[in-house]
Length: 408
Image (cartoon, rainbow, N blue to C red):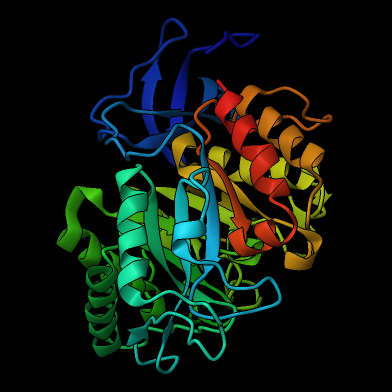
């Protein structure tokens, strides 16, 4: 820390609202007792007999001891339409190029919103002519895994509302998702809950200790799956900005807001120790206020920079008095449509690469100041979807995979 001007009695180091260290002499302090592979965000205030100064800008860091995920430092992540057809066409698992490091199978969906009973089957031949057999699909998954790739079940999606309102639904979720992982020999799950899947009950205003059943049951279910599959279990999440960054302005029903705003924050926070990658959907979003107090609009480098910086730096959660701590940089990516037809918020190749350059190197930030600092270990880039990228001649993959590989 740098020395403050004026008469200073000492300095206090804060993590969120808690003072975790202090010094009455010098400008360095040690925070001990931290867990391995944990991220922390600190601010510093000077004090004297008259009181305490305003706190500094936050600084984030990560302790050592992180497990090896088996992923490259910068990963290319994509969704494969495996259970349905759309305008982009069906694609066999064996035909997915080796550039894709994580392949999220879209989608596992419940038999009803509150059953917890998740099902996943390959697209029927009547809908997807040329679909491979299940045996060939599994063989192709194993071939991908032999190349070091990860294949996950993505649960939810636009149409797959999942509300684990009861412990029975929680247990059905664990049982049915585990059966799919075993049947298809998958590496883990991607939580892609959208729409009304997650919301906060009235009075649930502390993301650190959630009380809403659909939140607490999801956290418990994912932990149960992690316990079952161990260190090799890969967990990713693909929330929309409404459920994450909008929590900076509005959190659930605190202040009379929409109960869904910020509703992913307690899930992310509770599972941060087992989270592999959070790749927020930087698309199909309205303007969102960033840490600079300005609105940022999707479809530009600026949006990806501002939204992703919030995940690294952490941010105060609206009207709650609590601060969401930043994630480790290796846990963070962002998502963008592969082509204009894939979703609102498509960003040009140049715009995506400007954002990656800013986030990883602190360069080409376009006037935005990174509150969380550069992230040289930024995990990577997600897209909806592999199928749409193929339909448009692999523009996304051919441009961004070598760019990611060239980052330091």
